[in-house]
Amino acid sequence: MKNTRRMKRMARNHKRKLPALNLTSLMDVFTILVFFLLVNSAASEVLEPPKQITLPDSVVETKPAETAVVLVSDEAVLVQGEAVIATSDVVAAKQELIPEISEKLKEIRENVIGVSTKTVAQSDKVTILSHKTIPFKVLQKVMTSCTVAGYGTINLAVIQKASQS
Amino acid sequence: MARKHHYRAHSKEPPELDVTTFLNLMVVLVPFLLITAVFSRITIMELNLPEGAGGSVDKPVISVEVIVREKFLEIGNGKGVVANIPKVNGEYNLQRLSELLKKIKENYPDKTDATILLEPDIEYDYMIKVMDAVRSFETLPPGSTEIVKAELFPDMSIGFAP
Image (cartoon, rainbow over all chains, first blue to last red; front, top):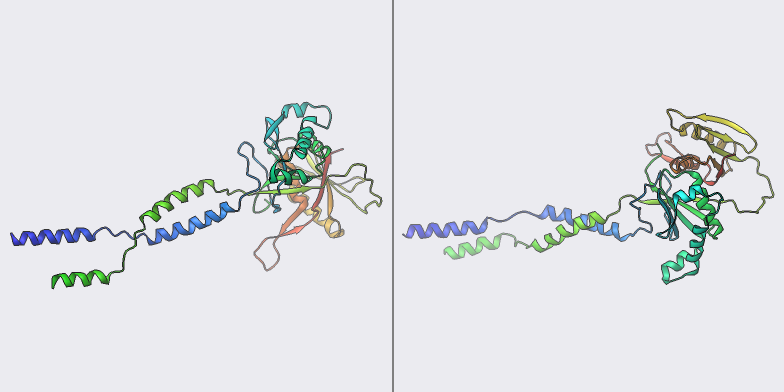
C-alpha cells in the first residue's frame, strides 16, 4: 500500500516534468523573419506589379515615381485604373492621337482631390505599363496621346532583373 | 528533507518562459507577411521624347541610330546604315549590337544620346531589350569578379523606322 502510493507520486512527478519543447531557435528564426518582412512591406511600393499583364525585364535601376499611370493590356487601355478604350480600337485607329486617352489624362490634371492626386496632377510624367507582346504602333499612339495631353516625360515600367543575358 | 530537496532542485533550473502566445502571433504574422510581400520590383526607363517644333540649331557630329526591323537590326549614323545585324536562331543578336555600339562609343566618348527606330509591329519586349543593350553593357573588369555596368547611350529617343 505504502509502496504503491509512493509509486503513484513518483509517476505524477515525472509526468509533470515531461513537456519541455525547446523553441528557442524557432523563435529566433521567426523573429528575424517577421522583422525582415515588416521592413520589406513597410517600404511600400509606388507601383504594384499588375497581375493581368506581364512586364518585360530590364536592368535599369531607376525607382518609379508617383505619376499618372497608363496600363496597356491585350484587351484594353487603362488610365489610372479606368478602362478608356479597347486595344483593338487603338490598333485600328487611323490617326496617331487617341482622343479618349488624352481626354482622360487632361481630366486627371484638372480634378485634384487629396494629396496623392495632386502630385499626380502636378507632375508632367506618365508611367506606361505595357504587356510584353504589345506592338510598337500601339505604344506609339498611346505615347503621342500622352504628350498631347501635356505629359512630357514618359516612363516605361519594367521588372528589374539582375543582369543582361 | 524530501521537500527541501525538491525545492532546491527546482530552483536550480532556469525559469521557463511561456512563449506560446508569442509563438501564436508569429505563426499568424509570418504567413500573412509572406503572402503580402512583393518580390518583383518595378523600375522605370525614362524616355526622351523629341519636343515638337524645337528645331535643333547645331547639327550633331554624329547621331547613333538603331533600327529594329522584323528580320534584323541596323545601326545608322543619321545619313545611312553602317551595320546590319541579322537575327540568330530567330532572336535578335543583341551581343553583336552591343559590341558595335561599344566601338562607336570608343570613337565618340562624349556621345550620350541615341535614337531607336522601330517598325510598327515590333513587340514591346524587344524594344526594351534593344533599349537595354543601347543603354549600357556589362563588363568584367580584369582582376574583379563583379560585373560592372558601363554606360553607352543612356539618353534615348524612339520613333518609327523609315
